[in-house]
View 1 (spheres, rainbow, N blue to C red):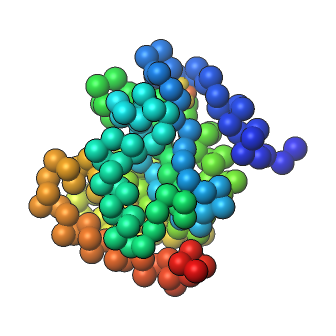
View 2 (view 1 turned 180 degrees about the vertical axis):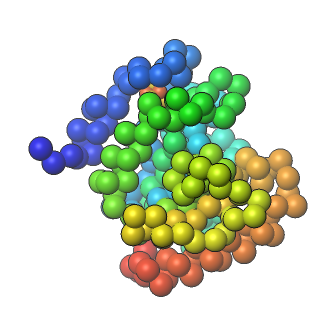
Length: 190
Ligand code: SF4
């Protein structure tokens, strides 16, 4: 039977495939338009996301909203998801085993959305979706063809909060994303 958002949400709800379910307040499935052409993928929920059940709602989320606004986008025109759907303790990197357990949910989100463009937010998402040994400091802003989709990575908003010196490079990367959207799926801006 063909997959659907309703089926996927029902299958994912209450997931206990890895130990991250033990301390979660909420599973953070995703947010945005289920018809979006552009998908943003972070690594996992933080404290506020865990409490509210939505991705990118803390300080990093506010910065992500600002970044979207800079390229004339907002959450209603994109979809936002994470590599793992439950908060890792103390915001540590998700383990490979946890990422593997959780991979089905994101893969089904990608299959349902079928986005033309995927933007990885940070090293963990880039390693999962572009290449295991992805070097975010050297390769951010570059574009890759992954299974027919245009995929890039930029610094995670949390990294930009910690280190403002990375922001000018990210502004440049964001301009590149806007160019790609205009070239590949201009309807996003109509
Ligand atoms: S992180 Fe993913 S695999 Fe682990 S319990 Fe949460 S939804 Fe399930």
